Length: 581
Image (cartoon, rainbow, N blue to C red; front, side, top):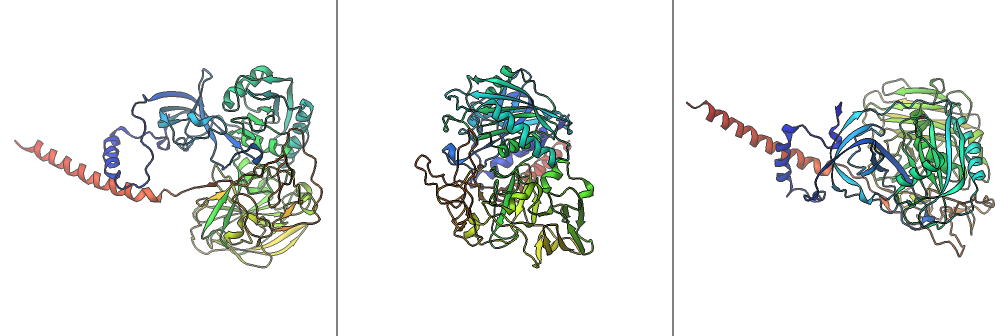
């Protein structure tokens, strides 16, 4: 039985020390967390720690920032107890945990998922580790259409949903994993299920759908619930919600409000343990200076923004999933000699498709070549309506929130960030990676491959921090262009409103948008104006702020030192008194 300090449990002998330190620090902290409600009696809950990612789109009618997953504990009796995601950050998803809960947590996701009743976690420990979720030969999918409380049927047929999963979704994951992960619909409930629960209680809604379809959770078993898209602004409904799993064979639950294949594939990616593919942008630099992390801002990858294209799974996510063969990758580290590397296209069937660079502090970077072929064939056609680059891309491995970070190889000034979706490394220009841990020069780029010169530093160089800036999340569903047509964002284009691309340079030859699948709300592409009278303009997206703990760390250390000195002196006095005759 292992105790996890990250969950709040402390050794009993430290409690007096920490209490005194907290009292001493109170006048020094400018923005301290709100005090717990002393009238709330702590309770203990035991069960499986579950997390699920809510996804939003402008069509949902409210401002969205990626605030992280919803978290709850599912007990053996079937009760779901919402808890603070921040408080359980150190506990593994899928593990059986024992948590001591206080009053309501500060965080709130009341617009999606009903987590406004989440409880603060005072202490916690792992009782049983999460089960190993290795890849299974097949992942069975049970499909149910649901009309939650307050909704009405939207006309989406069960056949369309089954076809999306058995067709493009299953085909994508089979190709990207070399057949290690295969999805297929094993049960499709023929009728709409009216649930007493609404989207504000997804756990109960999933349970009602599972009962109606006879779904039993387990390894390799997935429940995909289609939630009626009518009305679009149904309270508490996200565009999609996917349970975060522990590996490619974990199984899990999903709900979606569109049959868009890329969105369904995205949510199943969460079931397999993948976080988001986001963008890391810095002011005129690749990864130094003023930076932001913009959620979903990797339009190449299924775990980034969901739109009508499905590009190859990026190297970071493939490695995390365990489906990037050793023969298809090469690795370099600080101190290695300069090396010329030939990269095959990421979408190719073989060859060196990814290059892993490991800095001396453990930061990991990946280089991959995106060519217009195979799964990435759309890059050469009118389907590339965002004007994404072919060429060599640079990613950094992230954390559980942003699993992969796409770095901008041709960075724009901060004023042009929103309109800059071109990220390939420039040809013939040395680019410092990892704060100078590596220097990468792209020597040649062709459809058949790319040649790189990589010069590792001779000694240790600390990599820049990752993910500590602020950034607006682009729309989860960029949707289809309308009105003025698709925009091809230019790196020097003017910035638009927060979270949407700037106007950039419009592509006058953009193709007519693809037809919208049943149940999918069309959303204007970044940089365009939707002129339809029945669609409200997409709201600006709030920046997701990520702050460093350095602000409170120094006062904490100072307070502990003062308190420790006081207690040491007090103990010395007690010993002297005890020694007196």
